Every structure is written in C-alpha cells, then in structure tokens.
Amino acid sequence: MTEPGAGAAGQEDRLGPDPPAIRPSVFRDAVVWTGLPTPPGAGQPPTALAVRDGRIEAVGTAAEALAGAADELLDLGGGLLMPTFGDGHCHPDRGGFEALAPGGLFDARWLDAAAPDRPVAQRAWDYHTLWCNPTPPARVP
Image (tube, rainbow, N blue to C red):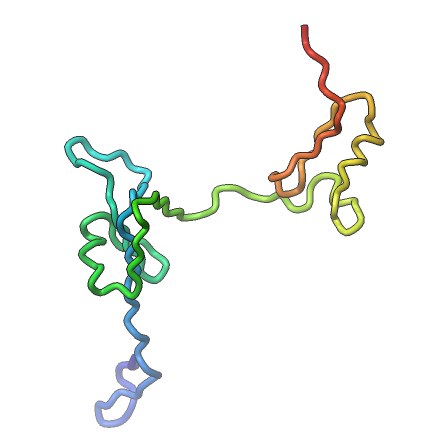
C-alpha cells in the first residue's frame, strides 16, 4: 500500500506491506437454502456456496467455479446449509425474577412457595427458559 505523492523525486513511501489476498472458502455438496424461491425450470436448489472475508461471494455454479482458488473446500455430504446474516432475536437485559436472585440464578421452588394453589409461569431474562410451578391450570368448561 502506498500513499500517492509521498517520498522524494516521484517515489512513493511504503506504508506497509499489502495485505495478502483473501481466498474464498467453498462449501459444496449441500442443499443451499437461500431464502429465495427456486425459479420454475431452474431445477434443483444450489449445491455450493463461497464465502470470502466473512461475506457470501457466490452461490451455485459460480461458487463451484471458485473451488480451485479456495483456501478451504468443505464437502457437506449432501447436508443442508442455511447461511445467516444476523441473529434475529434479542435478550432483554436481566428481566424477570432472576435479577433479584442471589447470583442472578432463579430457583423454580420459589414459585411453588409463592403460589402453591395456582399455576404460575416465569420467563428467564434470555427468553429461552420458562419456569412453571407444578400446579396444573384449571380446565375451562
């Protein structure tokens, strides 16, 4: 990498070495789910995907064409490849009873003691866990 106009007598000073070329990783022999419908007459969904520098560069035959230059060539054995562009859920910061618990760890026995005669459910702060006491809900006639 050089900075134009730097240096003496038309020479450019070097700011450092050029970064090495980033070669792609190619995933092949997979059903690649793109989230797009397969156009009529297009046949099967793509079976290869190329990633370079953390970004999808090519899908299908264009990805297969990069296999010879790939840094990594990964055979997925006919598996399903579902690339993701971001995590579509969030974790509210420390909501629920565990925020009040020692060390932030909720104990579901507290629900039993607090409400032994009615059903109670409490979500964890990450919304991946739900605590329920053993009291079954009443049936609605």
